[in-house]
Length: 229
Image 1 (cartoon, one colour):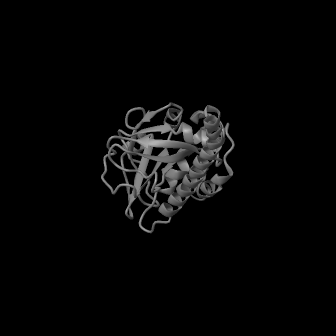
Image 2 (cartoon, one colour; image 1 turned 90 degrees about the vertical axis):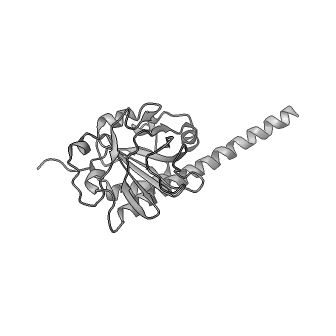
């Protein structure tokens, strides 16, 4: 009986891992869709100059079985970072955004969250096992509008800017008090082995084929900002 039970477990584990990997790929596609839809919004969107300057982009898509729900809940998504200050992006790291209260009350399960990491300090903080927004890194709601020049002192100091979309309403929203952590279980299922978020975001892990749609949207809306004359 014990042998039969062990055999059943050994058979079930690859099936479970494949199912989780499928969920991760769906989340990547959903993230690409969220970015595309928000940037196509007629009355706003994330200022493209901010996306072009971003070190990393994080997206928490509103999936029915893993939606972002306010009040002691959590949302699953991903983050990807530029490689060596270029137009190339790292493999996505699956992440979890958690908080007892995010500071806004918009319907449960129907919220998309996007955030940008705007400097090297914010990027370095992502190598930790857990990052508290507003504690470990300075965070604030981002401006809305295609050509907004975010040059206020507060914007310039913020390491992370964030936005949310719920029931058709898109706005900058503060995630202060929330925490970010890598989803180690989902990352292992996606990449086939235990990995650290640092490995993933530094480019040591090949991107999954299922991430092509995400990279297409980043190439469209977040090419590296040109400097110099």
